[in-house]
Length: 145
Image (cartoon, rainbow, N blue to C red; front, side, top):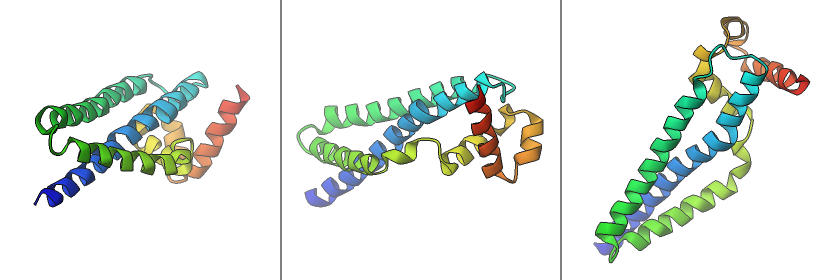
């Protein structure tokens, strides 16, 4: 029974680490810098995006911290090591995909879908169905400035 619980805790560690830390990396190294670039070239009608990402960042850090602290306080003798093994596997998963945390079509598509209301209506109307063209337009606009 201990082996089964330890295995479940390892999987929990992988999920918690992968979810919270990968989202934190995306926010810090893609979403916030990309938003600042868009604001610099005036492609956004509002600057509230960064505030929402900061809130999300704190939520991710809070979830990670709470899970770690709970396991440290209540399960230090039994399952805390299993959680750390899960975190290590989650870290390996993130390291193998580290290049996917920058500007690419998947990240941009998610970013645009989440923040579509902050873009100027003309951009949304013109490029809503063709995100690749919008991304090309944004890259050209950012590189000009």
